[in-house]
Amino acid sequence: MGYLLSLMVILVSHACAVSAADWGLHNINIFILAGQSNMAGRGGVVNETWDGIVPSECRPNPSILRLSAGLTWVEAREPLHADIDTNKTCGIGPGMVFANAVLNLKDPFFGIVGLVPCAVGGTNLSEWSRGSYLYTQLVRRAKASLRHGGKIRALLWYQGESDSESRYYADSYKGKLEKFIMDLRTDLRSPMLPVIQIVLWGVVGGCSIRRTIYGDGEKSAAGTSPSQCDMRGRQGTAPGTGWTAPHHSSPGSSWKQVSQGFPSDPAQAHYQ
Image (cartoon, one colour):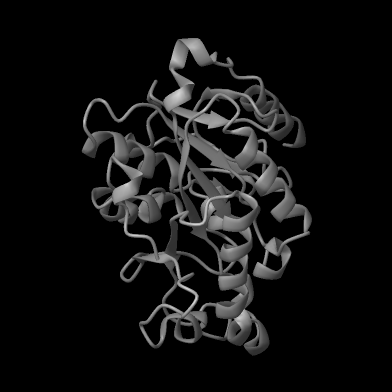
């Protein structure tokens, strides 16, 4: 099992790199994928083994690229996080569904979509604070994605189960999230960077972080609250296990609604 996992990581890491000239990377539309296991992708993973099934919504597309762990652009294929979240077996996540939906809804001149996987399973929000390893890696990878040009269109954020395990983490989540967004916008020199977050509903690990974050339905005075993608009615699994095999693309399918409202011109975006 360990050998197969290592082999998969090597194959993903060494996928054929693409050149800036061949793919027009100077106009690439970049989306950062960050958070914990549901973003990293656990769909189709049973007993630490991915079943290899790729739903049609997650199919590869020559116009969708992925920034590898080696900081090169390669054609995106599932599992997107295989060489990033290396301590766990990765499967299907929401990234490819979102990217395909963006391409299907935008005009033919929208250009290439570039995904920057950064998620790591089991992490809480404190581990993403400025100065931490995960935060530093996120910023490093985001900046590397701009080497040939392009624009970072949004951060897609799917995290929070780990912070529902105690009342302290749940109650402090909103403030920490706002600071994380402010720090990231500052360090990427992108004060209007859109942040799209999956909304967590119900009680996951004993405490509802949704109530502490979104209860008033208003964004903060700092204007840092993320745009929200509603996950009510989506079937998941126990905390830390991600989405079940029959629901590979549930989060990404919900994000199709987000992509419908995402403008071709980032200057037209409604930033929260």
